[in-house]
Length: 235
Image (cartoon, rainbow, N blue to C red; front, top):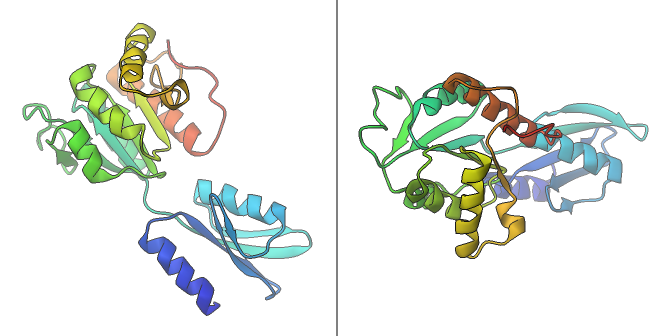
């Protein structure tokens, strides 16, 4: 590997910046592809392939333009921050862990966020905005608020909407969300920013039980991660 490429790759890894190392297997080209820039000279189709693979965290070889290319994806770990240690959280946490997410549960209510209810899970009993500031959500982080309590959900959302989190959702009906939107506008957020919230939470799969709702949320989160179209939101 070229020394300058190696140095820049290490810098990206230290700063947890997603990047794909692209090698032309003819030995002529080596470059780095980020979400917003390219460090090197690559055909557009190769850049697109590199970004698609980075999004899906899928390293491998592909033939494009009569050249074989190796794509080596370097992504920070996926994280899921759940605000509210409620029943849905108890089913969502293990599912997300199996899907490869580092899960953190935030709830200042000591009787909710207990090791007995969430064995082996990172629990934070800070106020949600303080916890979110400490966790620093990045573009590999999903955020789900489940408390139904504006005093807990809104401070978390205030930080979430200022972050690069790739997925933000909140539990609640359309009426509940409409009230949430008004509160966020009073905080100074514009429609485009508030529109980053996927609400009501989850895909419309007829979910009723906590486990089914967790499935619908994880399904929507996965679709957003891989840039797949969302067919419909839950009612």
